[in-house]
Amino acid sequence: MRIGILTGGGDAPGLNAVIRAVVRKASDIYGHAVIGFRNGWKGAIDAEVETLTPESVKGILPRGGTILGTSRTNPFKITDGVTKIQHTLQAFNIDALIAIGGEDTLGVASKLAELGIKTVGVPKTIDNDLSGTDYTFGFNTAVEIATEALDRLHSTAESHQRVMVVEIMGRHAGWIAIYSGLAAGADVVLIPERPFDLDEVCEHIVRRHHRGRTFSIVVVAEGATPKEGTFEQLADEKDSFGHVRLGGIANRLAPEIEKRTGFETRVTILGHVQRGGTPTAFDRVLATRLGIAAIDAVHEGESGVMVGLRGTEVVRVPLKEAVGVLKTVDDAIYAVAEVFFG
Ligand code: F6P
Image 1 (cartoon, helix red, strand yellow):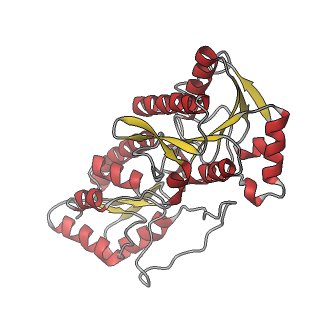
Image 2: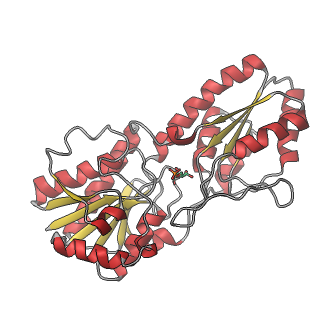
Image 3: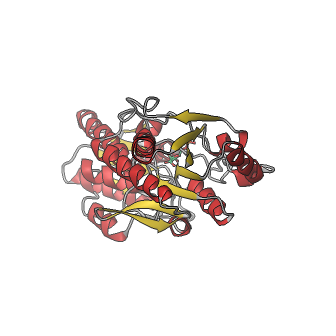
């Protein structure tokens, strides 16, 4: 067989571990060829390819990013995008595709599978918001990075008796914010799933300071929104999948917190540092298991499925199910974090 592989959407630590696993098992065990498309669906449309071999993937397991490059290209938004992908697959005699991505990349994969192109998905996003899998690789690494940052911010906040507002990635789901907030003992965590009331946030901070604490850590996911009518939202730029480019909620919150509480307040926006660098051991193992499961599925002739982690098992779930609804932060985990607010 000849198998195409691509990485789409925002990069996540562990992408190279998936690529390596797919190439090694395809080549060493099954005797299949693997052809990489450059920069996500863009490479499939523009026929930008490279042959991947055990030699070419040597040493990439601990490397962050993706050796294939990535983009947020949506073939369904480009004139003849899907026809061009079909031509590329024919031109390079590709029998099946492995798409590694989040809801957007796998949404495209799901539609292509319905059009008869053999496609298997691998879930990826630091946001951990894909259904059909308990965890996506990249999430654990992002949580570790955010937790370390919060630990470091604690000591400087304490020294200066300040409120630190820390903005963490998470467009539609606050998984990284809630996990790192719990791990680092944040005093308030604001997430997209729970519109916030700034007066309540300030009450938590003031109550904490009245109990003798001299500093506070407020974690805010970039997609967190205020309760209607309580705080002004700014309009943001959109990408080709219609997502707004976020970033900046912390800058809007901090002066308001300082004004309402009277405590000196500073902002830290962690941004893309959460997506960069080497994956944790957990993410390397998860990514490797998913890569092996994906090549096994392709070898067995599967299509329209995503491999995912359920409990401790790697399973196959319909792609349609995985991209249908986002997996958001559940009430139970939020309730645990809430115990420590204020
Ligand atoms: O989807 C992952 C993610 O890191 C989000 O948390 C964030 O909102 C977005 O990507 C940022 O996208 P970009 O890299 O295009 O700025």
